[in-house]
Figure (cartoon, rainbow over the protein chains, first blue to last red):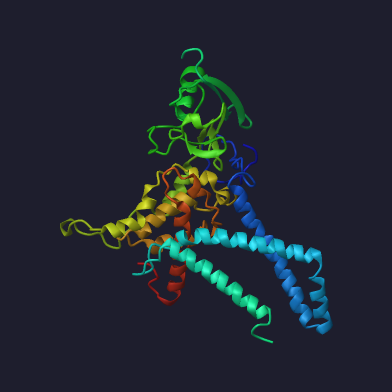
Length: 147
Length: 250
């Protein structure tokens, strides 16, 4: 046992008659054992925050003229930005795989008379959708649709 | 116990509310049998070495859910865990995320309050008369909730959950799983009441799907599935209640 959990974690609404020792966090939290994947999953939120800021900056530059937009594109060729985007892509893939893995069991046994499809079918559908959207976006961004 | 028998050292977290300011560690080296469970070793220590050691246990067959403890940092039922899978030194501590009453005994009243808050019983708008006979249920209807009814309330899932550690209001895995079990029951009519609890102060939406509860469950109940299904049901119920005055649940 190492660090304290929230002092009121699992405490009854009325204190008992005897003094109690404060609740402790599990030893391995947050970076040991299985907690590591969960903590990394949560930490990817920082990547999305930074990506969001980059997108806002890019959109802002669109309103400031062509020179500003070209400057943004030039800046994104910097090795620092390329590295960041590579890390963000790895984070996105990690989150996607983890989310897809958990998604089937979060489905209710039925919605009205309908039962969810088998787990395998859900997984195939999710990955097919992910790959399809990625391919479509890549075609659009590469200028394949709008010249 | 004969000489040459294997020995293991148990490092046990001790806490006496009358004497100790904080929990402390105490080591016991004892001879062990190859077929012992962790609980057997704790009982040996209490019976033969130190009668002041306090721990809970009852059935010794992973049914009562009393003997949950942290064994080498993982929440485990000590009556179910074979001792030979551990090394020469075994660390035993009270369940994480719970206040400690004494040694390995945790305060369980907080859990009992959360459990009763989800109304884990069949709620009927109107009771059937005895002469109307039993309420029948098909195997398919039973299968929808059977898994969640296997929970033995051992609280291991609470001990593993990072949200429980940081949000005291969170209802938690076992209580939500049991509430969800009754909401799925074809004989029950209380899903709307439970969905209000699930959307309330200890909301199911606090769950961040760490999945630790399902990893440590000794009965393979999969509370994470129950919590996340309950999220969906609570959301659907809320959305339906906006357009239907009677609410969305059955």
